[in-house]
Image (tube, rainbow, N blue to C red; front, side, top):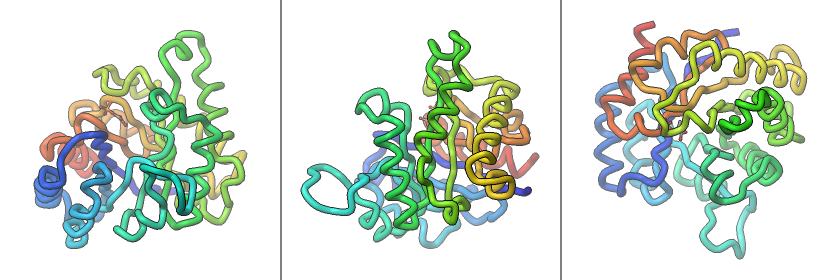
Length: 254
Ligand code: PEP
């Protein structure tokens, strides 16, 4: 089963609209025309409109960092799937550990967002991963399996091709500590097994599982060479074209 690599940049709460435009232009110049690796940038909501026009002339796909599970109505501060589609957003990061940690998101609340995303033809990048305490207690696989099962409850089999998972050990996010290549592969292979259980052999094997957690050009090649690591969700290193494009190039040169 060949899965196209996806390198997605999670800009978090960084970059004004004009800074975002500059960074997209730089990324476009570096890796925006190649089609071997799928490249996605996820700026803050306030930059999506400007970014949308810029990525139109490139192979770069636009992503968002969150989304409401509701279609419309009295939900102050929220952004709907339809609003994202209107700006040609293709991917949406859901259940990022920062949203779980600071905004009380749970497998159940993220599940509602995942289902709303696919119903609206957005591709969810569903984030999962254990905390340091959970890893040290030997609970990594158990925690991640529950996150996969509960977050994907009632996920429509017909939309499996639009599903992306991101395994992001919480202790590796923004800390400079990366999972070793073997640690990442062990968890990715286990996630793959759960996906096969849920959706069957072929569809389960077609889902891309990204690694996230302090990925940078220096460690990307080893992680991305693992059989079940199908790309990266990149935080800190996605904020400069040099580092982000360096990760894409690590795949191209492999
Ligand atoms: C992230 O926030 O998704 C992430 C992986 O961050 P970083 O690359 O900075 O660890």
